[in-house]
Image 1 (spheres, rainbow, N blue to C red):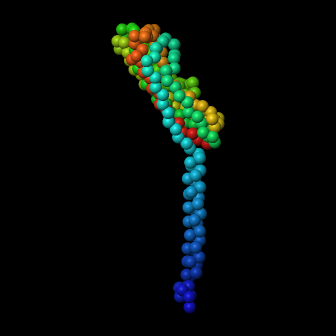
Image 2 (cartoon, helix red, strand yellow):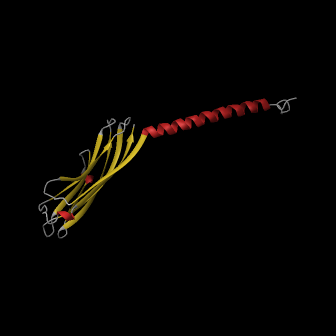
Image 3 (cartoon, rainbow, N blue to C red):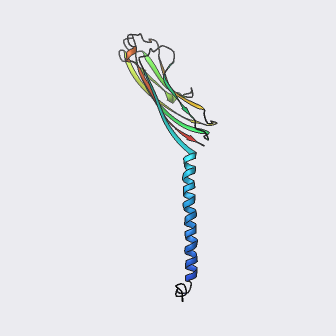
Length: 175
């Protein structure tokens, strides 16, 4: 008499069910591993930054710092969030307005622009912008930049050493 013969009635059904559950667990484990691999290919993050200093500020928009992301192969969409900071000095004694603007692929909306009035000879602004991009392909560049300008004064070489700008961004690529 074998071990199975000594089991109570229905034990064969229990053993059969255990074997089925073990087979299902192997499938679930294989599916989980596949899902993890798929997740790795569906989403890919990246970060970047650029800075500049000792530049002249004029009355027309000028890009101070910029950088590019390169879209990885297999991705067609991207979510980009960028933030920038500009400190600008002027030869005026105060009251001049200046702008700082963050751009993604050359575009920015009202929320991407900050305006301030200088206090004596300098001031600072911070701005942010986000964009959802589609229709991308591997190798495509996504540009991120910070730019600015003065309303009236501009600045001379005497003050340019005080000027600085930084832009940072994070991107999530989606397939």
